[in-house]
Length: 293
Image (cartoon, rainbow, N blue to C red; front, top):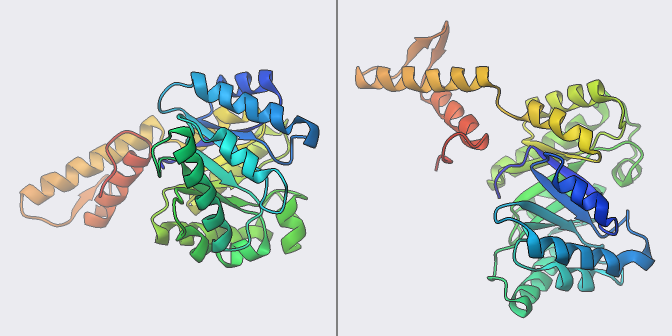
């Protein structure tokens, strides 16, 4: 799965909200069938997902969060929304690798039943339990995993599970956020998402939060309001200044190589192959070049 900078959550039973989310400028949307949808509206939410997928443009980022495995809804969710155009399922309330394997089996059956190429839809584990964070390496090695979402939200499932008291600075979640990034990189997962900033009107706080987590290694962030998308896109994106720097760095390194040199000074910095590869990856993640192998 390609990295997304911003992924906007929207309740699946709110058809007009879904339309606004798709027009928000977010790189992708997560249509929720779980916590934000009351039991009486689950089928309406499934129907809305199918309608969206029927008319979605190829390549659009459409994720769906089904209900958890301990509910009566998850099987109906997976069967209903596994249609052409679905990018991934965001998996809630996981405890270990076996939970991902269970969703993989359901998804395979749904792909076969609904005429979707087998293996096309990816899985994005949402790490919101203490057990899932502890077992993140095994979870990210499960079938179909194309991304990961680390939860670090205020007064949410993860804060209750882990027992931390949330602060905007995030020292209390630094270990778990770092652990997820390291596990994702080790597993070759390129889409590493963090969720989420809940103070809707505090855009400066959101900007600081996004900048800090981008610096930690996250490639994008889950957001809950359309106004957050532009801020998050900017903080997780590649500025024109950075793009110019990285392109110049690569050119300087390649020119040095043609002269028989393995290192060179570039804008006052000593650079070598490692720096050139970092620049290439930054450009690839931002969609400016093809991914490096």
